[in-house]
Image (cartoon, rainbow, N blue to C red; front, side, top):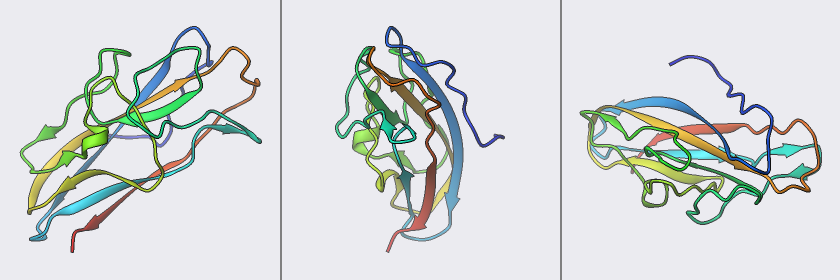
Length: 148
């Protein structure tokens, strides 16, 4: 795993743009851990691409920004979790072909000590035809904490 940015290319109202990143976690804490995703939706100045607040399929031509942690067919991006650990994506982020992004949501949990798991985060962006042109960016931080 390397790098700290994903180039989604030129956004289009006729097709979804997507990318992925990965992280790996493990813990010896008896109560496991939680990983949260925090950040903002895609913006260019004061223009936004709305984030999805519920698990939703990709609809090109509609403003959408979301993530999930599964292998997807539509669009073809992502990978199911890998590893011997006990961690798993949380329910809303564990649905293939459904994306959402709610800042501060927990996206992965392990309720026991866990060997390493590698999670792949899939990013989805769709825009309507009237989306204001610009350079759209976001920063998503992944925060791991032990469970209490």
